[in-house]
Amino acid sequence: MSLLNYIIRRLLFMVLVLVGVSILVFGVLMMIPPGMRVAAYVTSEKIPPGQIDSMIRAYGLTDPAPVQYFRWMGNLLQGNLGFSTTAAAPVMDAFKQFFPVTLELVLYSTPLIILFGVFLGTQGAIKKDKPTDHGIRVFAIIGYSLPTFWLGLLLLMFFYGYLGIFPPGTLSIEMKYVVFSPGWHAITGMYSIDGILNWRWDVVVDSLYHLALPAINLVILDSALIMRLMRSSMLESLGQDYIRTALAKGAPQRAVYRKHARRNALLPVITISGILFASLLAGMVITETIFARKGIGWWMARAATQLDVPAIMFNVLFLGVVFVVVNLI
Image (cartoon, rainbow, N blue to C red; front, top):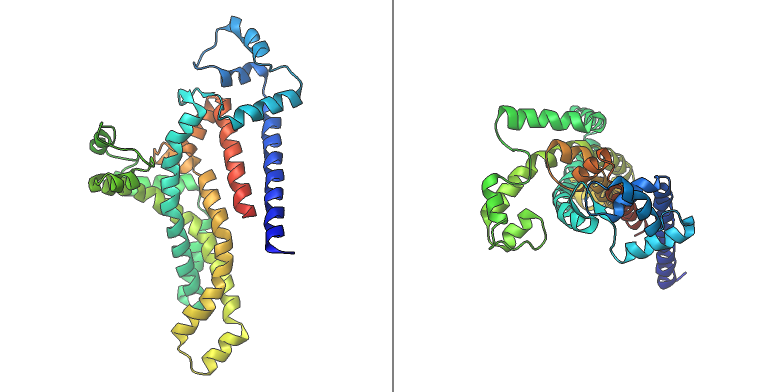
């Protein structure tokens, strides 16, 4: 099979899976009573009781499911996703506001998680069954089993509560005055990057200062999987004949480990990196809630507690699309 045919087949399969995801999400949506789904079409938090029935009929919420599905898909493709009562804005506008906050944390955390996990996993494999390896494995088990909320609260109490550093939130009050001033150009919505583009290094430093604790929290928790994967892959690579032959011929041990063994052992880590990125995007509810970062995780938590149906359904669909794309690329 040629490369072109393979790409075409993957793209067609991706489209079919995305359609399946949309049908699944719509099926969940249809389980919600029409009276609650009306909230997707209004721009206020309260609907007069006398208008609910008329709005249900006006928007066709009692039509057959296939008719509602194609109408819903048409609105989705046009960007008409309803109104989010928790954000007091249309869903797409709310997404544009919250997503950069989450993306910024994920973009900084993912490389740190991979580098930290690869380094410790490599050291554990090289020093197998030695005290260093035992310590790394214990750290990986602890990091893998710790509840996210418990570690987050512990870090927050120690660093911010006791030491008075690394505060929660996204920016200090002084820097918020800067980013909301008329002279500020919001290009990406990520303060650390926009700070560079606006030549405001004080905003960059302040943004990274507030990013520190949630990033540390994610690195401790999520690098454990990378450590274990890298260690097992590295041990398998070190057991290959070409590695033993190179060492027997007197090749420098450091060069053999770095250029040959580790390079091949990285393949499983590279494969899982995309899934890690998608998992971080989807798993920000607890982290953003604890560290008061108003991203999509924080938005989803509020939407779930306040039954903000349009926001919930859009985020479920968006994260489903992210996982499908990452797994099929």
